[in-house]
Length: 196
Length: 196
DNA sequence: AGGTCTGGAATGAACGTTCATTCCGATTTC
DNA sequence: GAAATCGGAATGAACGTTCATTCCAGACCT
Image (cartoon, rainbow over all chains, first blue to last red; front, side):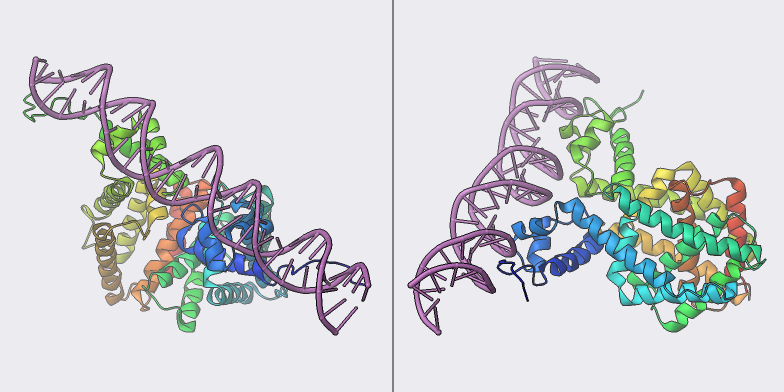
């Protein structure tokens, strides 16, 4: 045992509750559109308590960003079939993105909304940069195998990522339904776009 | 001359200056992130003057939205070759979007950022809806001519629009340069995606 | 064991600041 | 000179943040 800490009741899920509440509100109303006391209220804690866990509103949004960007990164890269054909890799990429967006719609919306915001700090930006570089590696590998169009990889990535985001946005607005068929169809559509 | 309005000191471009300043700031920092007195200062007018031209901050953002959405709509539709082949129509669409985005980068960023925001009023939303319906008409026309993939038109529109937005975002972040070649290349890429 | 003490965790009222908006004397226009 | 506009100080509400206080789970007594 030897537990000699004489603390009253550390945490008990409050930190998580604050992060959850902040995710919902930031994703819905944006950073500046969300008042800190509202986050605290939705998390079921006092306004002051929030500042026991996060140094500032900015620190909160950065921690949230890193949490979700990290999860997305791990979901994309963990066990990614590095040796598969480019077509199979693209399928895997699209499927994993879809899984993330379906499982965590607010996480996805939050990441998209806060992408490159001025209040993100250097570490948050570095995370983003490193993920982009990894994807770029796969794209250029596919190009060397003559499986993807030999145009600037940044162009292919921008168009593909944009298409996926557009899909999710349309779903959020109710213009389409995010069925497995819709996701499979658009996967094929975008493969046709970038394949050689 | 012949100005017969019975006002003592008419405008002199202040209204325009306010709209220009608001466009810059809203596009860069968002609605909630932009303070009204800052808009006034950048416009070179007093804070009170702004309220002589716009009833509120919300009224200002809505007017701005309608102004730019309207211009985009006119640029897309005026003299659009309704009888041309779908491929030619797609080229025209992509070219006109590009022209708008290159000529008015802040207008484009503003529209994208404030797309379906809670502070947009019913009239602003109706403008958006009506433009979507028009594009939908062209897509379904192309599908009936067996020139585009026979999948839900909303899916094709979401993916195409998303790709274009992704392109512009990548350019804004410095990942790519928006050269005529890049725009032509991506036009072809996205046509491959949606063509039958 | 039961009672008391203790110290970090939690709180929400209160603070200084910043916001959107208003007001009014100065200025401009005809 | 009358009328209307203009600008920026003034205003009250709302913001992010702090802090004096309360709370309570264990430590320490007896």
